[in-house]
Length: 283
Image (cartoon, helix red, strand yellow):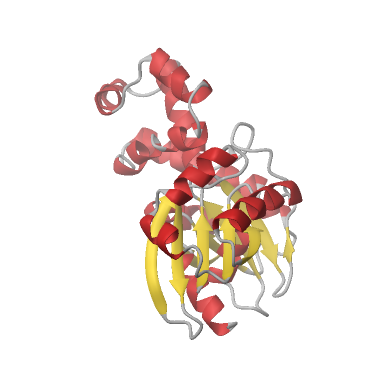
């Protein structure tokens, strides 16, 4: 059995294939980011999934693409966990950027591949190798244009009284904005980046409001300036995206890309389907 995993900060999509590439099952767990979770939490999330627990000894290959897997230390950390949970499997751990690349860009084709989901990043793919200009320092100083970026912006603007009153009232009705609740989630609970990203739903649902439209436009322009334009070929190759923010704010994203003379490529909400096709071709 072959397992293919696309793991973001919020959730992980799992597809199991047999040796002929036929799908056996599709399942989900919570995100398995090694940068923010302990071994115990990751093991618990694996063990609590019925399909994974039932089939764990049948897995022979595991292709894991995950947020927070950009360093060898984090890759080794996860491989050790997988070795114990899937005792008969050879585990290959790559950062989630490769999932974005393999699901949007064919081998041999050039492109810039971006992730805009709970977090964000951007890479250039020359058809064979991955290149990054920006080293991520995590969700606090970076992640421009992402769900947690927009969530942080909304909370700050609410507390600095910069959200128009009609929208601020609506915002307060939909979320618990008590300062103690916010600080509890940001500083004491796991996955503060995921918590921040939950507020992005409000931005998406109210995207026609002038305030929200402005926040979205400036956030995407900041992503273009700080990430995409780092590459010399930025205006010469397709710009591909995966992630919920890119998917649900597709129209607004395309507007910003076209304004910057960028070529709009593939925009996909989840890379797992593209990953399945990629690995079927390499069986």
